[in-house]
Structures are given as C-alpha cells and as structure tokens.
Image 1 (cartoon, rainbow, N blue to C red):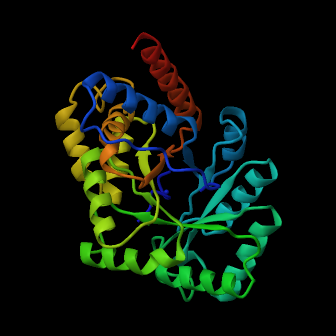
Image 2: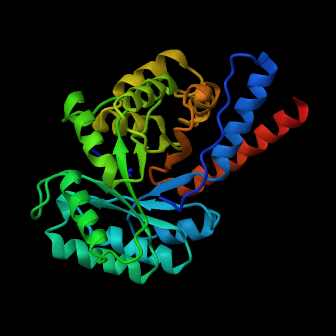
Length: 317
C-alpha cells in the first residue's frame, strides 16, 4: 500500500559512504553522522501528488537536480500520474512515475505507457501494486515487473534504465511478512533499487535492512521519511498505511518536542538517528526519499534550514 491517496527515482548516484563506529571517539562519530546526514539532504528524492498545480510548486521551490517521484491514485487512475510526469520531464526535471499495477489494463497498455515516458526522456519508473480493484490483468507489482522485464528484453521499453520497488520495514497491513519477503526476493532480479515506506523509527529500518540482506536481497535502499506535516494529518496517513507502531514509539519518545510541537512534525530526529546508526548498514543506504504529503514548499524550506544548521554545527564542532 502506498500513500498515493493522501499525498510513495532518480538517475543512479553512488552509495553514501558508511564507516564503522567501533574505534572512533564520540566527537568523531558525531562529525561522521553530521557529514552523512548532510550528504543525504544534499540530493534527496521528493515524492509529490499527481494533482493540478504540483508542477508549478516544484518549479517554484525545488532545485532542478532533485528527482521528483509522482504518486498514483486508484481514485484518479494512471493518467494524472503520467501527465504530471510528462510535464515535469518537459521542464527538465528528473521525473519518476509510480506505475501501479492495478491501474494498468494489459501488456499493450504497459508498452504504450513506456513509449510515452520514453518520448519525454523518462528513464526511471517505480512499480507498486496499488490499491483498489484491478482495472485489467494485473493484480500485483510482480506481474507488472515481469511484463516490463519482458518488454525490456525485446527492446520494446525505449531507454528505460531503472526500475524501483517498495520495501516495508514495519510490514504491510494487508500482506503477511512471509509473503512480503518472498515477493521481495522474487522481484529483485527485475528491479534496481528499493524505496521504503515512510518510517519513524531508524532502528526498525536497520533491522529490516539486515533481515532482507540475510534473505539475499542486495538492492540499494532509499529510506522513506515524511516531510514536515501537520501532526493530525501525519497520524491519519500513518495509520492508513500501517506505520502506527513507529508513530506510537515516536510520540512516546519525543512527546512535546518532535511529533507534538506546535508547528507539527519534522523528520530531523529520525534522520539523525538513521545517520548515527548508518555504520551498521554497510553499503545498503544510497539516499533518502521524502514524502512531501502535498507540502512541497515547506519540505524544501525544512531541508535548507536543516542543511544550514548542520553547516553551523560543523563550523563550531
């Protein structure tokens, strides 16, 4: 399940370098965590809504090099996703559509979509199962991935270079953990990277990465975090997509500060915890995927403010 109704790539870039913290001092560890967090924030991925006005928001507030992923919605169908992706691509933006299997009718529809994307220079897609009833032959992302792989093999997928899939550190509200893990193993040969569902507990992400690595999944990981958002909306979205456990943990641990502050939620603490524990992730982590939840301008303002605070800390550190 994605957050597409409420609100989740880019050209390849090197994995952020991780270091072991076992023999470093506390000051060294803090400095390395700060450097890692800065690197993650310098080139994030932003997920945006496939709604009127979004391209203009991106144009006005987001630097041109930041990849923009475009959600899909079972209520609106696949067309708004494709139209916004085409608009962004024509503006020179690295745009990545969410291709929801249940919104695509058959193989010919897949070929048509890939041709449209190729016509505007899109080379990266993110494949999900999607919600709601299927409109055609596809019921899950594995079926769609297999069709895309077949089209690529026959030379009928244009210049498509990258295909991403979703990962679920806290599980899925409608799919069992064994089924999720089996599907992830089955998909990895047809996908180039993973994007996690939004999570509010860095430890849960760490445990999940270590577990899927033990299963043999070697795909690089973009960790999904919610951008700045009103706390009530965040709780509603989180409950719907099945991340209530880490939301409850976050509220318990940071009551009165992060989640319950007057201005709403900001992902600073989650990203800080992730950077601090990144030495245990090896080369798995390649970036951060920010769910803007409709707040494009606020998300970019938050990113710039946090980068400035990190730069100040480095100067005074």
